[in-house]
Picture 1: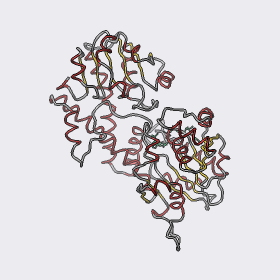
Picture 2 (picture 1 turned 120 degrees about the vertical axis):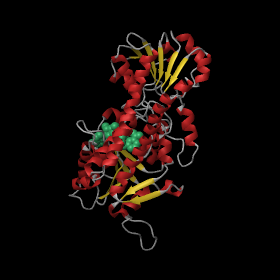
Picture 3 (picture 1 turned 180 degrees about the vertical axis):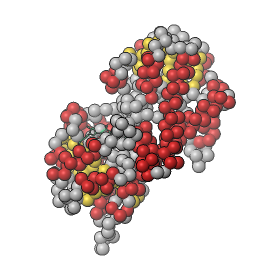
Picture 4 (picture 1 turned 90 degrees about the vertical axis):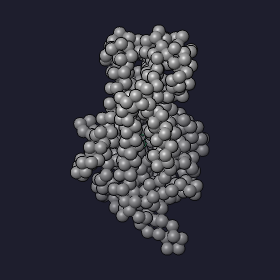
Length: 448
Ligand code: NAD
């Protein structure tokens, strides 16, 4: 099929490249010429495992190209909207201006009977609003296909997703072909796009626009709830002299609970979860569902509270204040395997420590370049060894594998004081303690 992907950031670039790898002819359109230049050259403008290879393959096959001109999308039968929906500047609600302007830019180039499908995460009611933007084109079909990929495993998540969700008019495939029984309309178009995935048995759910919009928001709200739940319990563990890592392991072995997203630590960040739970909260407030509104408020407060707690523990480990102390922060990305620093808990903590007078050095395997552009008050170092030199306190804030497996003996020879605050609870505390380190985690006071 001929497909366009409008917005080629973390979501759109991966979507475009994976669609091309499935045999479609894809044009990716983005307003950022720098991004387009990178992508067109077969190089991802950000770190995402496996993406460079897909981009190179797509380029070599002639099926994948990128452009800044929405007119280059004119031949496409299906257009995917993948632009950002960030938190608004003055409220918790999502800012939909990028979606509106992308739709307006695409409108004059839509072929007769084209299908426009949104993938961005949006509040309920967005599709109805966009339908208004397309009012002059009743021939154009509209659908919503929320995306669940995770940065760091985005390529795999796109090629082997847990499920496909189609939001369509009326909540059901419009009709079935009388002879073949095949779905028609938006469902048929998306089935054709995702043919290889459906053939591999990936489940596909067809539902109304409102349900599709809420599925994505509710899924993220649930994940955030799980993280904040165990982080709130971590506080309880510290107060009671219990160990949250042992507690969560035991809880997670119950298949009704499961161990994923049940790991206590510094909490979540990034370009999605924080803004998505705030948007969900704003939607609940608008719809008058106070239980969801209050719930999301608490989940957010617990999450942000973990950052304050980490800063407080750092001061405690420095004898009451970090002022004048050399502090090394391991990690700048909001999570491992990405160079994305949007709402990074690690950088938030680093900034707060610097504001409290610490001399902060931050290191990260991939995100140093992105971070120093946005955080000029911090010192950055690409080499872990150099970053650890003469540290009086080490904080592990992003759980990259190379920090999990750091040798405590080698690190001990570099620092001035062997004190580590493992805010992701991933270090082998006993091994570090054997090398003379004071080790502190979040919710692990009993074993520190
Ligand atoms: P992003 O900021 O990385 O990418 C958005 C891109 O859209 C940018 O490259 C921007 O230049 C481009 N853009 C803005 N206006 C445009 C226009 N008018 N025409 C063409 N391009 C335009 O954001 P992202 O992380 O890729 O997220 C995009 C959407 O996908 C959001 O709604 C997000 O919540 C959702 N989502 C993201 C992820 C993820 O892991 N990043 C996962 C699932 C869903």
